[in-house]
Image (tube, rainbow over all chains, first blue to last red; front, side, top):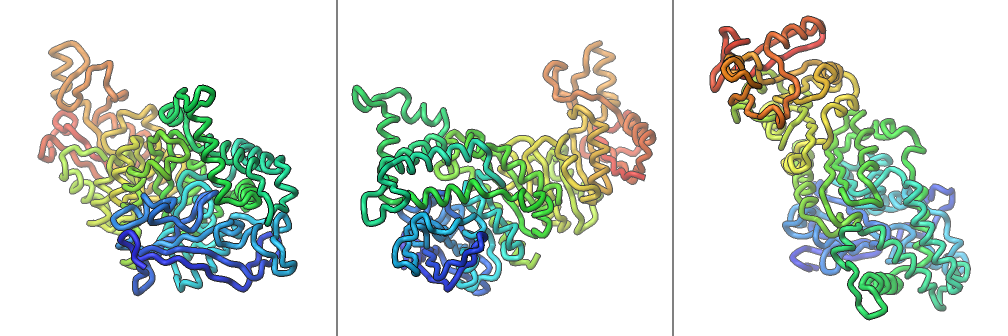
Length: 361
Length: 198
């Protein structure tokens, strides 16, 4: 199908089984994905785009979470590249997650869903890439949790990725990041409607999930961007603009997101720690992958020092790494909304990687 | 790499660099030299640049540039990771030039250092005439807003190389558009040294 000037496919495929890090095997596993653009004859132009915590497979085209980055002439130029995005394992937008039916019981998994990790998400993505017949991805890229997956790809399957573009991300969550996630989880679990995770077919824990999302939104913005967007303006005599905005975003989130997915995915992010598997420089030892890391000056949730930790490790291996801390005002959200400079970097980096891949370097 | 004589810089540095080598350019600006070396000498290049807007341009150009300050940057790379480490027109601005030079020769087999020669006759005349800190085409700043914090000459560099037991493999001296062969400490505006640890 051609949508917004690019060939677009949307599908769900089912894999027989997926072995998880925790030892449990999920069988079968659904994976929802979309693709944009056309895979070239030698399958060398495929880019896997990885979504952040609350994203889904709908990355490009109208309403896509990265529609300003994916499309004809954009950073991920669909006239040149074949872009793939799938919903993560544990998600609630077509891929198997806690809201899916456990084939053994015929009921939703809910909190009996096995513990999942970023590594498991990437294992599922690798099944998808194998299924699509792609040997080596031109690039893996994503922001925030998407960046963690990009790093995981480079560490787990270095031969399968020519380049990685982790944006506004980290090799491990800090105490502050874990703390915010925990506030979100506690808000959900404090809602009586959560009912130990068993709310499917009934009333979801809307209040808890909305509060969790409100906290999340605060961490995605910056003091500057909030001042600019809301200031102390009031929507009503007894309501600040910012209150109304957060409430709106919180309750809108409830319509499209599952509270148990919130718990499982934030746990996976908190658990992620590349350094636990070895010193970062050693982990990247096998990587022939080129790297472009981007951080944002006003991102206090994933501060630039976290990107620098990765960059230093890569440089100590003399890996091919480019890094820029972009001046941006929108905090962590910058990778989604302030994409002009980011586009310039990604476009140039991809073009040179593509040239190198084509020349067989 | 800051351009001294535009594209001519590339030719000079290009002359010193063997094809298909690994090159680190400290203070690489917008990555023009690295891009040129990649195209003309097929080098595997990396750059370090402090200014964000320049880093952006360099990455957009397809050059692998890291945003950071060069003094700490040289300490991160493994020993002998590069065949050449380039430092152009920046040594006089570093806080600890000797540390930088030693770092360059640790991570690289050879260092290419280009610097403005404080011994040039125009600098000497300027100070003699005015009795004040020199202000010339080469050193255009007032003393209170100059980025240059170390002033040294061709002879100074030679003396340091001797003291540190570096081998000076090539010397290129420039004034305006031409090469200088006669009395370089007096006549050269820019000196380019190719040195290695002996």
